[in-house]
Image 1 (cartoon, rainbow, N blue to C red):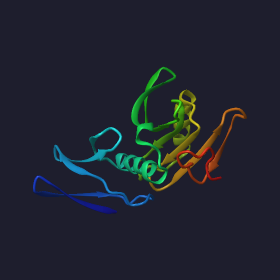
Image 2 (image 1 turned 90 degrees about the horizontal axis):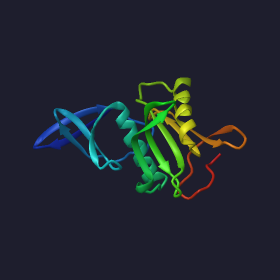
Image 3 (image 1 turned 135 degrees about the vertical axis):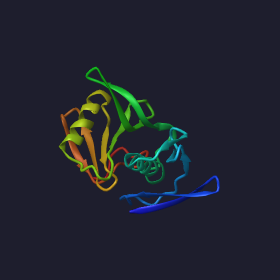
Image 4 (image 1 turned 180 degrees about the vertical axis):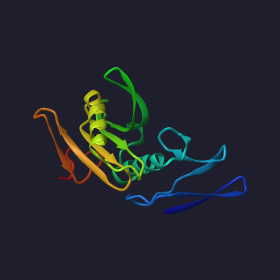
Length: 169
């Protein structure tokens, strides 16, 4: 468990969040209506901190700092239609041509990644047609590269860095 301390209006606040399987990052926090909020670099606003949001913000910084994806090509929590239903994806990275490079599904650390999680991202991807998929609960990360021509996918060790055409197999 990671105990975070931050100062807001001359008061100290503490928040316990699970340590995740990502590099250490620095985040901005504030107290918002007696809840802790974390600053989202993509949406440019503070978001109430939940376990899933904790994972999502780590993913965003992983993409920016480790993978060197441009901030302008990352989108967080937007609505999409899947089979006529309104759904919300967690994180998307776009290609320069506007197509989807990576579709990412985030779960809270206490949620075990199971077949239902892969089914969920597969349903979203039927609409989005991403080149790569990532599923994570912050502790376990799964990456795969889609091959639409041969109707298959391949699990990978990591996502490609920005500008790479193929991921590390």
